[in-house]
Image (cartoon, rainbow, N blue to C red):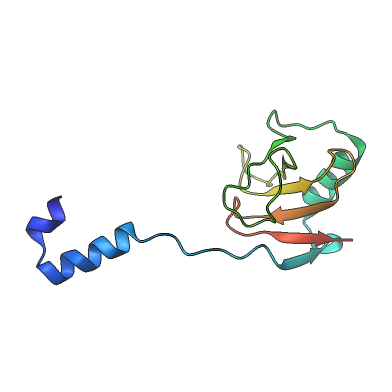
Length: 124
C-alpha cells in the first residue's frame, strides 16, 4: 500500500489502525421526541401512515433494513420507512419516519432528520 512506503513506520501503523479499525458498537436509539415537536410535514406523514396513504414518494413504505443497528433488532420486514418532505428541497432529503409493526397500525415510530445517523422515538 502507498502509505507503507511514504510514511515512517509508527505513522503508518497508526494510519492503518485508524483506517481498518472496526466501527464502535452503537446503542439503540434512546432519545425521544413528542409528536407535537415534530415538523408539521412529519406530523402529516404520521397521519398518512395510519390511514394507509396516499404517499407521494415511490419508496414510501418500503422495508427498512436497520443496517445501522440503531433501532431494536427485529426480523426483516418489521420496519418500514417513509419520506418526510423538506421545504425547499427538490429531492427526498434526509428526513424520514421509520415505523415498526404492521404498516397501518405501527407499534412504534422513530424520526430521523439526518438520514439514519440518529433516531428519536416518537411519543404521542
